[in-house]
Length: 283
Image 1 (cartoon, rainbow, N blue to C red):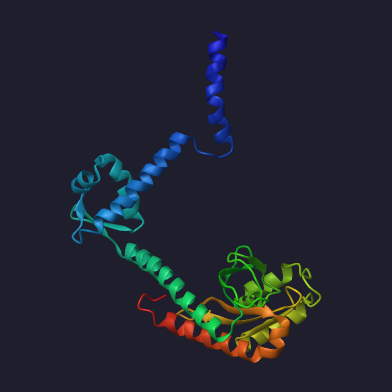
Image 2 (cartoon, rainbow, N blue to C red):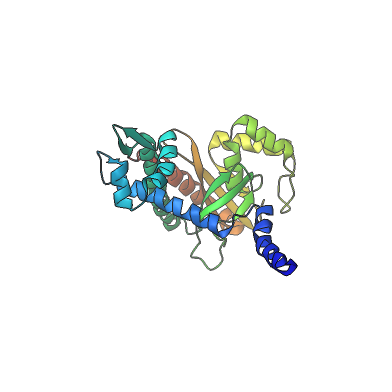
């Protein structure tokens, strides 16, 4: 009898360990996966019928019991992703806003990629689109076109840098609201990454003020010895900051061609803002 109990206990231990770690057992994961698949199926089906579908019609088309569908439809109606009127389910404005957002994000990436390529044709250095992560207080190089030149600044997309030291990071920091920026400056540990990294908070504050006034950021060997960056802001239609267009390359070439870098960064970032602002999708 005790041997049977022992085997029974052993069978329950994996589930107990998963629960302790906050990990759902396989059967729960399967249920969640089915629910997600059914929810997506609801949207895919309803979108084909502008006049909506009844519960019975949805059940028939999705081959899913009405009771199972109701557990998914009710929260979708409560969150305003679906409308339930006269016994029929239709898409709500919230769903259309979500769809537009998805299309806009895709279109935004296409627009920016083309503009980055144009910037590189005019200035054959590494061209980067950078965004701020306010949660981690860092700058992310979201998209990168490496310079075709043999000696170049090489960095993969997805790289994360501190805000206080790179041209893009400083520009993004300069355009944050004053309260958030000042809180960041009080708390950040200004660790020197090169001999030219700014470690004095007052000096950095003054530089950020200058960046906000000029709409242009310059970092000469502040993040990496021998590498210079020039960044300009890209705005959305409502004037909100989307990110920074960054041109980066060897400091020696910057001393020779820096004027071109600044013109191209400013011009292409301005054009990006205008194209995005005039987008039919409202991105």
